[in-house]
Image (cartoon, rainbow over all chains, first blue to last red; front, side, top):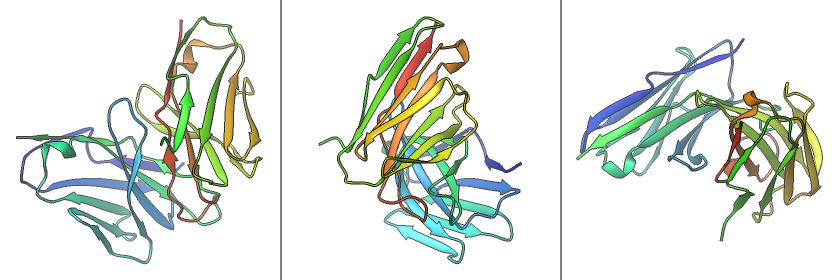
Length: 113
Length: 114
């Protein structure tokens, strides 16, 4: 069965450093991958989408890469700030799946001042 | 303006009871979803409706019954609640079904079954 793993449950880094979160998958061939941010007691909020034919996407301090050979996506936050502290979820999707996204468990990022 | 709203935010009830959660979106989207996020934090899709028609129905006990009176509303009714139903339930919507459309999530309903 398909499996999505996000590298660690928790990641602690110092303010100003780059946070790198990993999403690995097996037994699945996604056409695209989305990253969401979830704050405690709230619903996930969309951040970035990357398609299978794209290597990299950027949005302000965020960067996502997608390697279909390694079956891996990396999510980077540069110049991290305490306000970036949240849980980050990756979600895989396929064409024709009618919006059925498969979510990872998430990585809880804590940025210390 | 709240894009996707759910009521209630918290629901505490006894085993065996029947309860409903309501969801409304004011984004003009065609597609709405129900997700369950359990204590291990996995977010798993339960149902999806596109223009009031059921298009995704994952392996969910038939005690769970979604209803979409119009494309802006998707309610979830749960019969004979069990302890294992305790979780946070999220409603979401997207412009269209499928493709790369972003999903917009509601704030969640925390259901606790005693």
